[in-house]
Image (cartoon, rainbow, N blue to C red):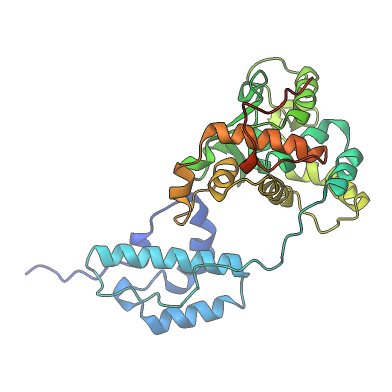
Length: 313
């Protein structure tokens, strides 16, 4: 007679994306990993989720719950359980703990002026082009099309145990072409001319003293924190500059679809809008950002790229 086989444990149904490693090993497995999937009940999930509040923050709590729900959905698809026991309403999402206040143009100017020269363009691209730190740190000379004033965002660098890793964006939307506002183009040219390495693979913002190594966040923060204090914005995280860029683009009259394309966002609710965003419209947004910098913004809903005046320099 065949020996009775025990139902598999939850770990056997873990769909290993890299972002879930911390949630899995710190929060899911210690409490539920040795249980068969048939033994994970709605009551057990509610109790586990409630206890997570004492051991981690809201973001990791939401990640851990979302991971467990994915595991149980896999078990459900394989007909090992009849229903998914993860039924805590809203547990897979996290509310923003604070409202981000974007930098004003005056604050941004003060912030950039207070930064050492080699970091200024990094701050400007974070704000005016809404780029992430990981995207900026991995930008190379070959990613910059100066003639057409376009940044080709194709990769990012992330910190991992024991070092850093270059990887693709989280979604296909993250691979995007971002038009550079005309008032930044001369600064981009100057920055490229000042790089120690001249090859196409040269990093735009390398580590101090080693042009072949990626910049560490700690290196940036050592000069960024005093600069934001000088601007009177001790609350402004570097990533908040990306939010500033989104607000600046929205001020030009950009639609939600255009903002999604420029920022590289792709969520279920906005994926369809993203598909209809045209590359040519992003050029109009970039030109409108230039006008916004000069205080003469014209909403792009009333502007045409063909009628826009030529920008010298």
